[in-house]
Image (tube, rainbow, N blue to C red; front, side, top):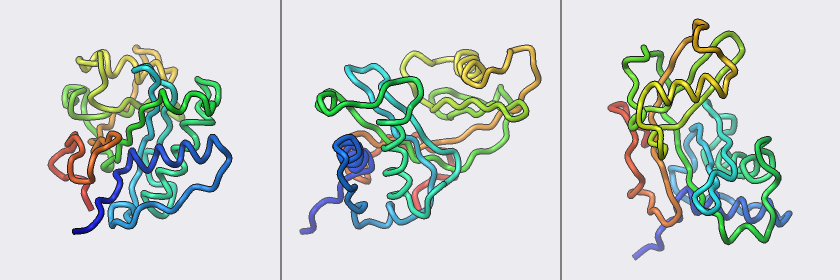
Length: 188
């Protein structure tokens, strides 16, 4: 019987702990999931409140393992909305990782905040919101928050894209992630 491979959120936690402590990050677990190329977001919460969330919409690294390590660093130490995470906070943090499928253009009426994340664009301004977030249960709320994040007024023309994710929480085995994915899937 083989040892289970730690899931992306557990690996992200390891990366956060190492980054905050100033130590080298260990290599990603030996699994093909970590070897594939994919964009992801690493989300940190403290007492169920957002503490950091940074990610990529397109892969910036050669592997998902490297993408997770990069975004764990940014979520913990570079999210401009929060001060850097301190070592004394680590025990209170929960970590999740959303692995993104490629986005596709869509109309606003083709969104579903429980299933799809949203990207809004107007020129160089862009706002992003992940799917299935607590308290975001209407398309209007989802698009409104994304527009606000981008600094786009509601009366300005903007483009919309949607994407699906596979969400991993700490303790999830690789096969037990929440399936917030579309028909195209994202498992490699």
